[in-house]
Image 1 (cartoon, rainbow, N blue to C red):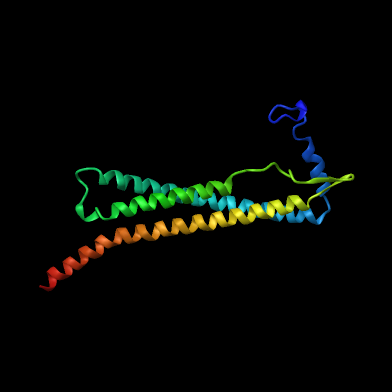
Image 2 (image 1 turned 180 degrees about the horizontal axis):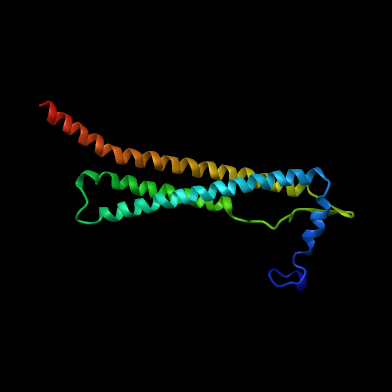
Length: 173
């Protein structure tokens, strides 16, 4: 029992070798490779979205911090609430991205012994569910970040538009 103890057992990874050998030359190997390829792509996309979220959060934190000083313009006061909403959406989006990149299972945990080989049906079914869940997590996270982007752009250009309207009224009078 101590030989398979996590981190310390001398044979803690030996079981995976037999399972991988059982995969060679089977259709399950191709399916498994494709599913892990999809997970790899999702991981890369979620990591990129996490970087975008961190840039947005940094800008919004500075904006919110600036709003608490005496030098903050009154014309931007209405947009502070939108900034708080943006940060809330970005935190949820980042949490979902972390759920996409997490490693939550042991490799080939659900491969079951079948005489001298292993059966991979349960493993493939579990992995397909993981791919589906993580795809949904990523899509929701992406939409939340897109909403933040649209709100931020609208918040930036609304004062400029208001200033342009005031300038037009001044010039036309």
